[in-house]
Length: 136
Length: 155
Image 1 (cartoon, chains in turn yellow, cyan):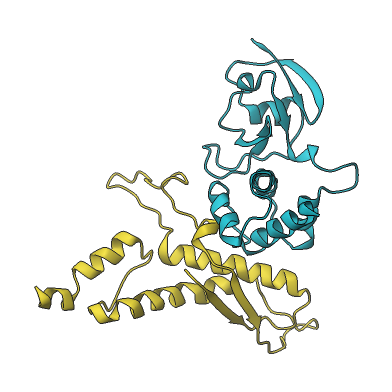
Image 2 (image 1 turned 90 degrees about the horizontal axis):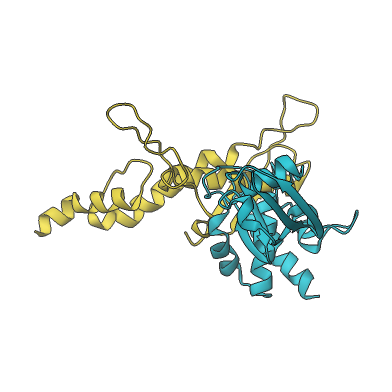
């Protein structure tokens, strides 16, 4: 991932550094959900992703520096005019990442992919694509 | 039970411990140095990183007895009284932590990086942190803190 830009409405920004930090964390969680993280159970209900060797959390080198900004409408429901910021990064980031993947795969005829879009799933989607099948 | 002796944060310590005691258990439970955290208990998350003879190491992956005679530094050994170590100060200044659970390991790993590479690039910092997981910062401000800490240490 070479870059990530996020713009959020968080109401009044009280501490910009903390707001940016919360958005960064949410983005990382969203990216993780989109391409890496997933709980896998076997047919007997045994969790197969029970350690960090098997459950893939984003590491520092999986992520870029984030470019974040706020475009705020003041919150009307409280005197501080604030809104929540703790989860905002995690809301838009999974669809943004999956849309980027589908955009890259569009010339191959791939129209849908399930999260997490792991390298294996991307490869399978390419193998199953209509464009590839037509060429063969 | 074997008796072990080592130097921890410049102080000589000695204790009788069960042979199976992990270094991190010894630090936290016998010495009360709870700044070193146990995250995953399986040597993947890096919250337990300390320095043993100057090298960063996951203290949940080493027996206390293996550190016999060693010079151990934990996060508690960095500050000079009330004065934070420049790397700790860089984390404070750059909001390099949120919940703080991974922070002791991040700081200890970062210090091993800068002693090997005094002027790392952003990419080199990110690659160095492959053994340290963080769930809440997205790493952005951790990387920024380490670059700032490295700069401060270069003077």
